[in-house]
Length: 336
Image (cartoon, rainbow, N blue to C red; front, side, top):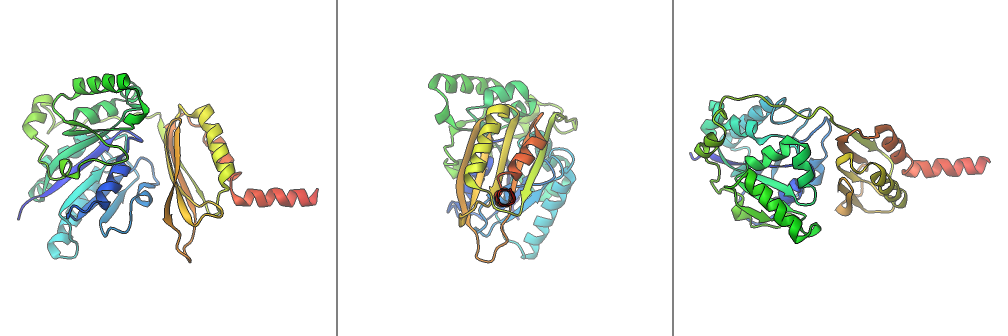
């Protein structure tokens, strides 16, 4: 039986990994895909952001980074997927591993060569790295993980190229070329890119990697930036749209530089559909998601990732954007 191809999808926080993954899952390419996703922090949100009606197997891994603390979970999950495939209870042709934006892909790739059971059943097909054209230069300067992700890539996809000038894009491409002269670079606008250039491309070459990193198969050293933290806001009440937008806009004006990534699925008053919140630093967007079912329990969850974030201020401010806060204010008015 042929080995199962595995694609590692990486890229720094907010570079567009989930957008691309949604595009792949929706595409009619004839492949059945198992998705393993890893998020920074204890509570993940990406599983809610992915399309859920494609019949694909989607597995979440939280409580740590896939390249270090939960690497053992990756081995276990891959083993369980293969066992189910062999038994005929699960059908898939390939696997995509979406790493957290703070992951170094090298230790993840290493798994397919140092673990015999995994190597007997899976083949690392390619490392695909997303690069946020708007924020990449600053990310390269501040975070070594962003450089590692580019340096280890077999395919590089530039996102948000419409938000930078031609000169800025040219300078970024030149810097990326210096970090990785061998990987093809292409643009991906909202995840739109030829899928055949990403899946089953046999882009990973161990000999090429060993020339760049001779200790790739033996080196297990890996460090994260301990200043990066995350927290989650959860609510059972709906948000008031105007209040939420005004509050987030004010927070971004004051602390946008500290908010490396924020994303969520939220319930908004008088809206029949989920609202998907996504943002990187000062760039924020809200879009309509899937419809709420008639009897579905509605709630909201927003994940914030960054440095020196005003956690209490954000949590308290979001509470004031809920319908319950409006009701409480109305009661106070009645009393007075």
